[in-house]
Amino acid sequence: MNIGDEQINRFAYFYAMDNDLKPDKQPQSFQSPANWTGHQTDLVEFIYTVHGTNAINNGQAKISEVSELFEQAFNFKLKADIYPKYAEIKKRKTNPVKFMDYLKTGYW
Image 1 (tube, rainbow, N blue to C red):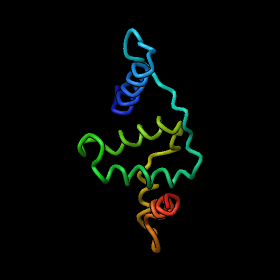
Image 2: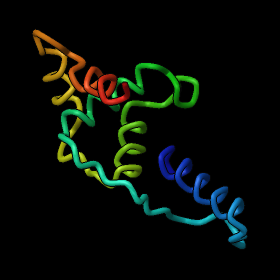
Image 3: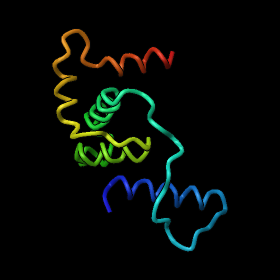
């Protein structure tokens, strides 16, 4: 079991406990109700930003684990290795964090 499966299963277990569903044991899978409907490049930017904050497992999570966690959370399979997309983002001349800036404007 990898980091994404473990965290999703833990979430499902505690959700069940909080809602008096009381499963006999920890669930084996969880289907997220959320679907990523944005661009793949935006999701990769989001993944790298979260990974760069070291906010998951005290910074010990690998980028591949964070990527898989996001894929499961948003029901979105990244079509290929995320590293080429990241390289594409890093080459942006005007705004390398375009999606993060967009998120800030949507919040306010």
